Length: 325
Image 1 (cartoon, helix red, strand yellow):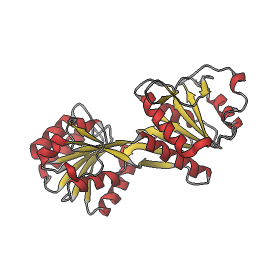
Image 2 (spheres, rainbow, N blue to C red; image 1 turned 90 degrees about the horizontal axis):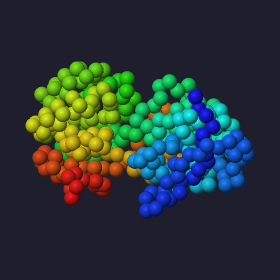
Image 3 (cartoon, rainbow, N blue to C red; image 1 turned 120 degrees about the horizontal axis):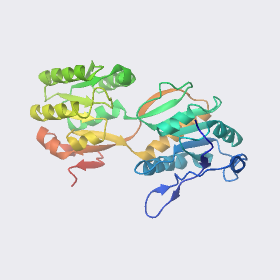
């Protein structure tokens, strides 16, 4: 059950770090029942959780991007798990909020219970909330296949086929985008379904048995069934190294472990993208659906690139390298 713990609270800088203000205070009904004088014309609320580092700084960067794009229309709202959504609804109504940007799972959960007159844009999540009882435009923290495949062609111009193992319950929507993106870049996407660990392991063994390292690569989506960290990832990394098959990933941590490259969010850019969606919603644009990241940053493993005979210098705009130089 949510209680009345929330506050309209813009981010403020702390020391030399990123601008922070995820400080949530217990407020009485009288403290927030009237419209905020600081935000007389606020139309877009940004609902974000009171949470510790490193997520505090990440949300601060996202909110900074939202504010940079949407300006004075933004009303930041910090919440806790016990925040009373009924009270929040009433305060947003009094503030004239028409669209809410919800950040993280906690923000998405609260936003899913907002009044249906308020449009909802979600960001900073790995998956949509299947039990949500309302329409939401959800921006998933997974790089767009088009970006990943373009990066693959940069470092491996001869790439013609991309293998992927996925759970259709999690990633069917993403595979539809991936097939179109591969075709547009002159590549074939060979997608194998797996709904449990055993079938995923078999699929990877099948892929490595037939993959041609000169033209094939393996993509690891953000899929908890098929890209399991303790059993599946060691197998993938061992076989890819032994057979010199390139592996690229949608998860940032995998590049440290040996994937050729991965892509990850530019938090400020994500904020600007969320603001564009919210402003579009105010203007009558779409109100539901899922979309992957727009612009994302690139991390590349130089040791893996050297082992594969890949010229990492072909990649344009590398943001991070491993091992760190």
